[in-house]
Length: 147
Image (cartoon, rainbow, N blue to C red; front, side, top):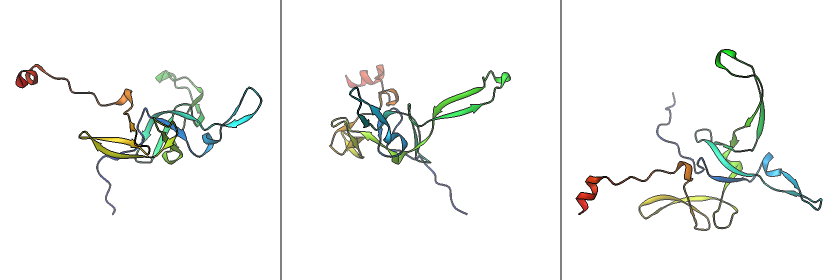
């Protein structure tokens, strides 16, 4: 019998991060310019979900699949063809460096007593605003203790 892994599994890519595809179907998107030339433009988007156990991410507007859904009147679910994002392997996307605006790998460093994500260029990768940890508010007791 094998033991199940315990604890939290972390992913370097977090929900709300801006990523770019570095391989796969969305890497080979083509865009026609006004002068008629066709350019390959890898898709950029925001991460909407992360599955760290299976190393998968969902990117907004990428890897759209069609799901045929049967109607269920008891649950007020309408039937039809639904378009939604599919899971993508996290190795197919890379975070965007805030300084150079190019794909980058990240590492973790401890700065000012906090563990932060840092790009290859040395730029600090900010936590996504929507999902960042909230700052602890000072209470009346802590203010009175300081004075």
